[in-house]
View 1: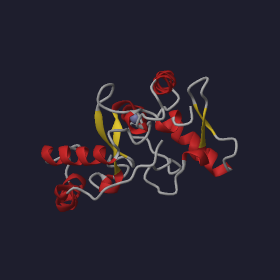
View 2: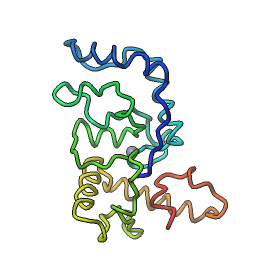
View 3: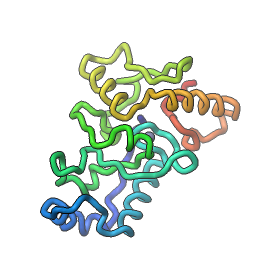
View 4: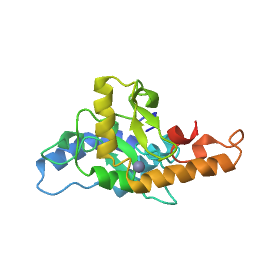
Amino acid sequence: MYTFIRDASPPCLALRWEEWTDRYCSGDKGFRWYSPKCYENVRQKLFDASLQHCAFCDGLTGAESRQTIEHFKPKERQAFPELAFHWQNLYPCCDRCQSEKGNRYDPALLNPDDLEYHFDDYFVANYLTGEIEVSPLASAENCHRARVTLELYGLNLDIRTARRKREAQLFQRRNPETELLDDFSYRYFIKNS
Ligand SMILES: [Zn+2]
């Protein structure tokens, strides 16, 4: 996970999120974006801020995965329906992270736009296996938060570890001195590879 620096909410959402929240919370129908155009604006704004990376696995979206909007706190009625259209609750997310997490939530989950968040406080990269491991230096609380985050987003599934190793090799084969780190997936993993 890489720090995500959030921009201001797009005007269409800032203007209508409260109305849409009321409509969703008081209606009997499921969640939907009441304006597909605004959904597009929100998605674009989130992915522009993340430079097209998923805020959770840091994979580049587009070629291998679809761009989706993740509700960090689930929008279901029994969870956090009041945050269904809340800008601070929306994140750029790849479809794999989205489907791994589903509507699960744990208060210990690491939040990528927490400015206090630093990868090294929680994790270490294992370049042999491609796994992200819990840092042996992490405090007990940080260990717990790291474990929860790895589990909920499925960050050490085989497909993830294989892709991380492949991306690190690709980065090394190019010239790491001149390549732009942001053009690669899993920046936290490959930057020290
Ligand atoms: Zn992802």
